Image (cartoon, rainbow, N blue to C red; front, side, top):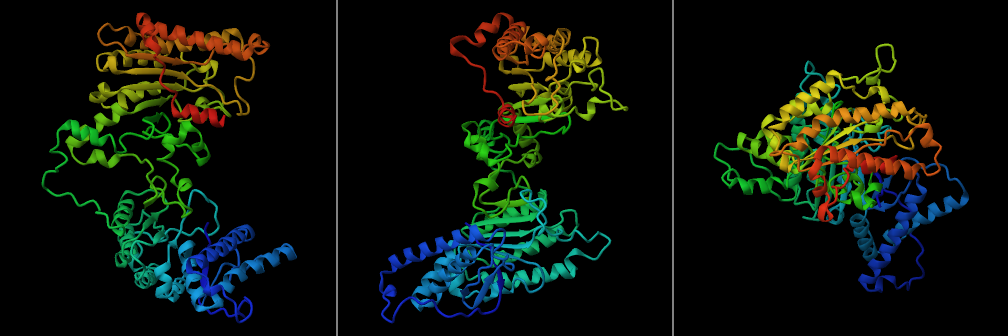
Amino acid sequence: MTMRFGFEPRAFMMRPWKLGGAGFGFPAVAGRLRRWTHWGEMVVVRVTVKKLRGTRYWLPCLIYGVKMAASPPPAPSSPLTALEDQKAMLGIRGLLLSCRTIYAEAAALLYSANRFVVHYTGAGTLAPLLSLTAPALSSLGSLKIVLNQASCHLRPRYHGHQVPLLASLTPADADGGNDTATQTLLGEWDTAARHLSVITSGSLELALVCDISPLHEQAVQVAASVLAPLGQFPLLRSCHIRLAATPDLGLGQLAQCSTLESRGLAAPKPTTTKGSAFLALPRELRLCILEFTDLVTPNHEVCWCRQDSKYTWSDLGGDYQCNNDTFRSPCAFSECWYRSTPIGCFCRRRHAASSTACICWVPPGPVFLVCRTLYQDAQLVFFSSNRFIVHDLALIPWALDCPRVDETLKDECGNLNSEYPFPRLAASQFLRDMVPAHCIPYLRFLELVFPPYLTATWPKADHPVILDWHDTILWLQDRINGPALTIRLVAAKCGTLAPDRPYTDTISVAFGDAISAGYAQLLQPIARLGRSATNGLARFYADLRYPWEWTDEATQREDRRQWAEAGKREVKSSTERRVLRDRYASQYANGKEEPEVSLWQHVFAYHY
């Protein structure tokens, strides 16, 4: 539980709490038992504060002559609330003012068991840190210092967010390092860091936030100045550093090096002209080692879509999904701000940050830039160890028609196009333009996902898209490693919660026939890959929506769901037989099962 305090450097005196007569014997109780009593008192106070304060709460208490308080208190909602408020404050004050022995134990517990947050808002606002005495600093367990906080995706409209450091300066302005406000901040932070450097080695968890504009040419120099005072600290128990609200390679590397050094771990050394010992290893060992890097995503899935035109990994979008067994494995490498203690967001996927609590997956771009040998090894691991999911339009296939038809399907007048709106299939674009030709044999699993296109949108037999698709398969046929490649064709359905779904209105049987014909146009070229005698596909799976599910006859059936599922199974079986022919039976022989559905389908089913 976190207690947020702003520091006001003035003494706060009050009458000691009446603990009894002169013969009160609590200090004579064994120290271990007294500490348990203090802990119970602290827990009561912290729970009460969290319940009553709303967003911020007034909690004055005497800590080494420093009054720690937040913003002015709101008006009490009732006399009972005011009474509970007074009791909560008296709990800590009474312990601290009772006697020297209890004061030392209670103060040590207070500093070690709570998280303290300090915000820099202008000159002099870090001065209260200088009031902390050496005994207090030796007990300090968790401290978060916010020098400048530009944003956090968890609270996008939080009124306390500031402009990124250097954001108001342009290259034509004065050197960012000479900016008066920046120099004031750096000077006060350096002074405070020198004072804090007497902390106990290995006991403090430090979180430092200083969001800098990565676009400014002096951003790296200013970031280095922010991190330099950390060199005065002894080893930290844990460290979290954020240098920009958005990801930036240079600032992120600075944060990572500083985080490692603060814990006594060796930071990556600069590249030398000497040969790398890693490259001297046999290639088999190098490939095994690379499989434990971010080249392999947490659930072995990489997504690519036409709109983004880049490799991505599906984001789960919340910690509540991690309670599902399906998501637990990938959850360990995403959404770190949900799993870790409430220190704020130091996720390297979201910010230019580094944290001992963040092991989130990030795109492994730097691995491909080391040297040619490592580049080739990385390509082999990346394309052979992940399943590639190619979305024909968007990463979330229901974004096309559910809840609205995407603008890309409309002409200049805003009317729906009567044919497929793109010059090529996304699958053709991905295989011919995105994957290097020499990496095609590395592919092991390819999933082609089509959104719930309207009836008229599915490409016809004479459409240039289909002709290009035939050419792509012909080009691909001699390049793939067929016996090691699995292809799955998916036609996504609409979400049941999406309004204005295109298939909630009934369609004619002819429209269902048109959708089925669209499936056939996509399958005809793929069938050539499955029929090859020497380089045929290892496996082929189909997950296609039943085309006639929304006809008048279907919507009037009492057993509509069972009828549609039976029809879907029939479409799946006939489609897979069409591609694999005689090898279809061996695909499911001896208890073999289809590989589990991809993560995007689980997320889709969870939300929709």
